[in-house]
Amino acid sequence: MAAREGVMLREAQPRDLAAIAAIYGHHVRTGLASFETEAPGEAEMLRRYEAIREKGFPYLVAEVDGAVAGYAYASPYRTRSAYRFCLEDSIYVDPRVARRGVGRALLERLVAECERIGCRQLVAVIGDSANAPSIRLHLACGFVMTGTLRSIGYKHGRWVDSVLMQRAVGAGDGTPP
Image (cartoon, rainbow, N blue to C red):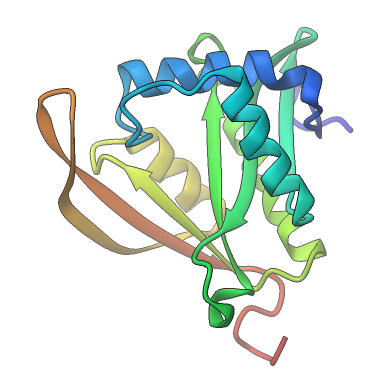
């Protein structure tokens, strides 16, 4: 399951959740990618992981030098039936391995996995319009800008935007599902 040089991808397992919780916790505490203000613990991350996996959605980890260096998953964009062919991606990378291709490897594989399960549209909801690395990553993987929700959240003492990006998966809207 090789990806970029030195990055190995695989399906996430419950044993990965301590590392996943640590990576996510860092982003919750220090960044704007997530609008959560309190980092969830391992038990909550397990509940979330199980909810995603029970629905058959992909949940991946990337390893660098044998350690979990990032993770990505797809979840329903919205719960109403008409949205059933649209998923939202989430990607978080350990800052110690930033700019080593971990995010790109995860997103490319996640898109492929979403296509495999019949997804037709993938949406990225990116916290903070100044989050240039995430925006560049999504653009490089075929996403297009679809909008910005200005000052939709308040975190770390300031108003924060959400950037919406989207890409077709497989046949997209070219044929009925």
